[in-house]
Image (cartoon, rainbow over all chains, first blue to last red; front, side, top):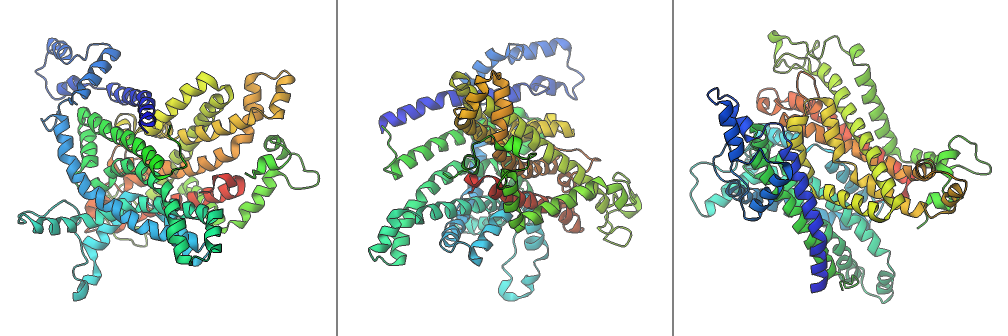
Length: 331
Length: 304
């Protein structure tokens, strides 16, 4: 296992270098470096100031030197300084990651809680109406623009909610956006309040993942129930439920673990639109605001963070696969 | 693995059989067409796409307004006889903009997917054909591109390359070719060792002739399927970027930028938010159904 892990880590080195180069280039090649942006709307700055500032920030040096300096600084936790928020980028990101998790974790759990049972049922009753409905649902989830779905949900659950005329359903309306109500007492009340704000964005964010997890669960289950060992289990006289639970499900979920691990970074990367629609102060929203404000140090930091997630979860997916499936040799 | 292409007399099929009548049996594309016709949802999807393309192309004949014609006396007007879907906050006729936006959104989707397919085929073809260090380098580049969080990077790139249709197409296609490259590479590894490739070489064909004339045509089916699904993804990405205000810039309408302000007016004029999103949704849904039908018809291996 240790040697497998070492090899896997070594293989990642070129990947990490490649990713960092591309991220660096995308943002270094952006027209308008921080000093150019500073000039904007500041008539008092002289040409000498510009030269001095560019020299001070090292912007007059060749690209490869700047890249090495940038990597060196990033390794020490220095991702630069936000022009608009006037704080170090890293602390800004850490502040927002917590908020993002408030949205990502419920969305993730909703997606799994729906997808696994639906996918399994769909596979066990292949070509039944249930299967067709589930398949149609996955197409629906993969095709709908999340931000538009969000706006529609806001319209239905925050603007009109006609059913709230019935006292029994009066609770079924949600805030149109935001993160928490002002002046809510600490402790349990905070969580109850927060839950209200989480429902709509989490539902919207989860839809895409729900659809793809359903797809994978279904195809993985279909694959497994055709195997010989399932026939053997049935031949031994095990009840159908036992066959499914003990033999089919456990094997079908192994590839799903990998898929799920690989998709977790996408929960973060896919969130900018959802977070923007719902005014959720997460990391995706931070990225959008930073890009719109021309605060490229923040944008670079966020993208670096997201790319880091991709790499870490890639590794975790590999390891989990090797651990869960004894047929995978890792020596 | 029972692959259609190797199942029927070798892999020479795709390029030549389309034109030549088959002796004693159906050709590859005939089989594919027969299978495709049975996929009813895909036929519906294809029809919807054709319909939307037609309304976009013939937009000037379907409406009496210009897409940038504003009427400040009739802003945010409710649907009526003269404005069937109402007007937006500047008094544009929403129905007119919906038609013209289709031109932009569909053009972006199809061009970006086409460019990505060409790029992916080139990279995958060269990678699989030449193998060795070139393959290694190209596949590592593919891995790197796959690992970069696409939407966030697109948001940054669109900020200074977006605005124009060409810029958005370029940005979208640069982040959409990797899947195709991997598919084509896999096919190349298999195809390049087959007898007809050796035969072409023995006849003195150059590398590029063997690759693009003999091998690539045999790998086009999965490219077509992947390309179709990319169209949907590209339309969704363009819509998202334009919604954020960093994609296609008004007054040029796209389904995404029509939604840009719609959320602000959701309390007063909710219908503004409905139609552009519904068009995106229907288009992408139809394309995904079409892609599913193509996959079933052309390449059973790809079934998920």
